[in-house]
Length: 351
Image 1: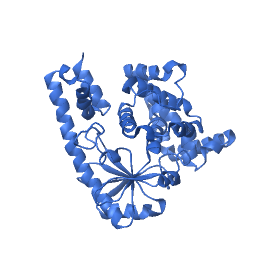
Image 2 (image 1 turned 90 degrees about the vertical axis):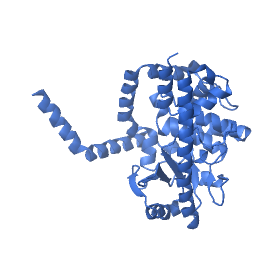
Image 3 (image 1 turned 120 degrees about the vertical axis):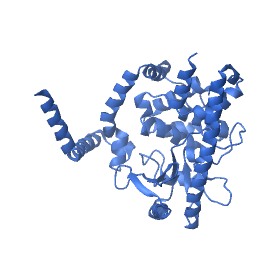
Image 4 (image 1 turned 30 degrees about the vertical axis):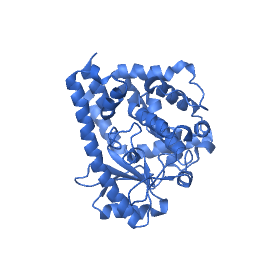
């Protein structure tokens, strides 16, 4: 066993902090070299301290929002900072390595929430594409993570609407503060959508190990409260049933989670899984796929529907083609000087 390669892979997939307790539960940790065991415990302890500081940072933001009459809805890893460990660990979220926190606020409260962050010393560092984008990113000097302030749920309007998310949101247990989180069914659906569709995980053929670990934790936490037939319908409405089945197959083979009821078995005998493994073993192939997707992604149906505020289900093929041409023209105009400069460089290099 190449222990250095194991540690490097855990670091690359951001699951190092979760590895030691997972091995302990299966009585496998003692099989590792002593120095590797010490390293895994060190990372776990350091991440627990870091997440405690992130939790304090987030609590300050929640305090400011509550004082202004705004109850935020925490998304993704932000929720793990406050929920008990499903395996009985003492530190909430100690196994989750984080780079940002995500909060959703009502659309009409978004300007006030952004103003409160700026008043607390944060600066707007990037607004995700478009004037009315789904989120703004804020940073503050000395803060451990950036803050993603959402007005909607990612690059979509109709897969999971903001109204549906708020309607079924559930309170989060906090001391003296008010915050919400997505209901279990929406949490699972949004996790898979965000990783596999919005972040292109399925198209790229990536092995989303950290997200699969989050998924396993959520499934263990909520069990029968997850409405799998509803999740299957949500993905099926947009023709994404294959993406859901491939996700379930990865979770089955890599996390030991049996396929849930209401989700058909993966077709083509796990072809997507074998593609992911092949690309992990070939960095050159993965680099080529990433380059190809970077050229194609701005013109995918999901991006077009979001950018032009269209309902993905009702987007006629001719309308989609027209929007793609419009998008191509806009990008060419936006990057015209950079393209001309690059063309000049290539011409001069050939002379």
